[in-house]
Image (tube, rainbow, N blue to C red; front, top):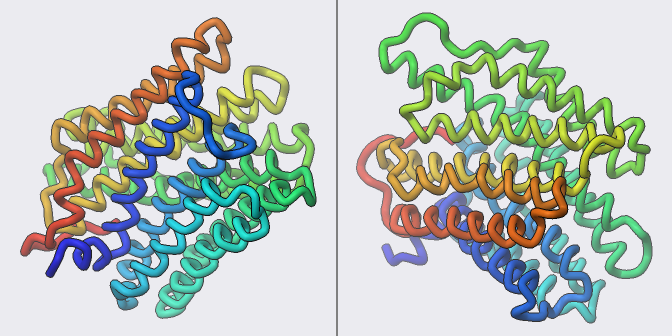
Length: 390
């Protein structure tokens, strides 16, 4: 089996690898523009950066996760390599169009908006093999993510003034998915590891009412943003989501995972997502910087949790031991530092000139380490042993 066929043989391989490549490339270009070294061929560089981190990097991570996890949940046949190659091609075409075809905004919209519906149709077909109400919520999240992207493109076509709502709403959809999926895998993986280590008491606790509160609020928040509801409505919803999320992660025995980086990074990513929601809620109430909160969510929450999931799934689904190598552990540590610096750059204007480029550099280093360590895993055949679930 040649390397390209291996890469497209499973959804997580191509999407996770390309997510890592895009994370490095796009932020390198952004950092070079911030430093005045290059001009970007886009009319609004800030919008391009935000859009591509959400609907480029974020959508790739989401696509790789769902194409891997849903067959495990339902017993459906995984997507064949031709489908994987095709849907990856749609994602890549969107990235090229947003970068290179800015003079034809309608064409850009048609190309970029094609990816999520094609991905969603495949996910629907797999979920219907064994339908469960709690899993259908993911289709709502994908629909909201597509709607958020549509609002951005309508603005770029000059038809509306909805790009800010679309960008914020898209990021918050990703954060809502973290509250759902991170709230499943983090305590579940931690419990499994503790039981395997022989521990029988003081296991992670995940109360259903608290989970329902955090998830409901976290998914209601992007709906409120996309609907254009005022800050007075958004603030309490975000504070409830963030507060409930922190309460949940405090019950998951995170201290026990300190010698297991592949576990503690899940706890840290989930906690930073919850902290970001709290910061966003406070900003909507007039306390603190909204841009700082959005970057805490984007870098610490989305960046941290996707890095954790992508690295774990890449190892588990290729038959490798679930042990993070040194470069990957360093990547885990760099992301929260990048988030803290970028938060400081907006919350403390005096830090901006130093903190912004340094935050970008730490992000680039983190995903460069991810690629260094896991590219050989993603491009090579599965080892002859059982993998772990996504």
